[in-house]
Image (cartoon, rainbow, N blue to C red; front, side, top):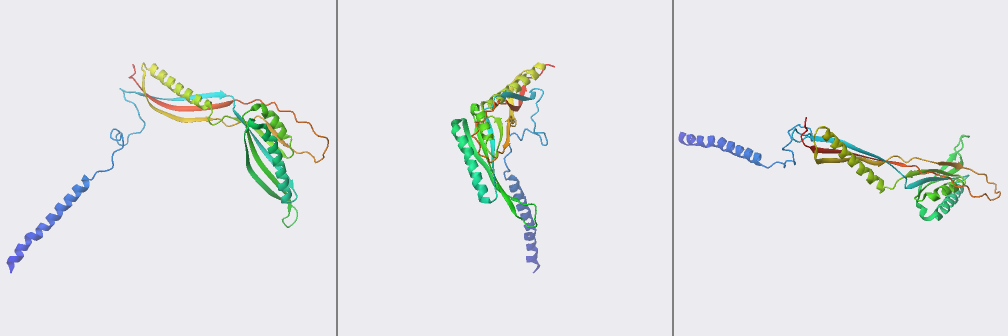
Length: 277
């Protein structure tokens, strides 16, 4: 009866050994699984090192900033037109506003190609509440329509501005001078900024008795036009309802285009030969 019990002891002691071996093989299998691929250049950068590409004594680097400021003639001029109307009831205000808006459109559209774009913006009809009395009572209705005219031919600008300002309950703001989005002036400014960066880097390297070897980075920080500036503003005019003799055409305004300032900025990094110190 004791003999079978003694023969069972080796089997029990062998089970933990087999489980230990399987655990070790599992760990080795898990450690053998491939991890994510390393990023390009990650092996050459020590852990915690800054990402800025500093140079070495054998391959120094120079970082410079190139800037360009150009003054050019404007290519377009914008006029903002606000048409107003007032009526004792909503329908009268809307009808009057529609008539005045059509007046403006009929005045601007005959200029043809001189007006590159004519766009209608916001439209509003607002009730005016009487300040007196306990109950809210609408005293009148005010209507407004905003339009924007973009002109590329400045010869018609002064005449159109004067004629618009001569209309009843019509406000004209502008002209607001500017450049087209694809203006060649932006490209000239960028090229000049790059040339200035190269020249500045050469001067720094030459001061150390070295010369430039290669460009490692070129960053375009900003290439944008300054804000559009108003040159002339025509205030709103209100004339009486008296139908007197026909008035002559208003004199054309003499508007001088305002030159535009274009900016460009770049950062550049170069490698250079070891300096002679």
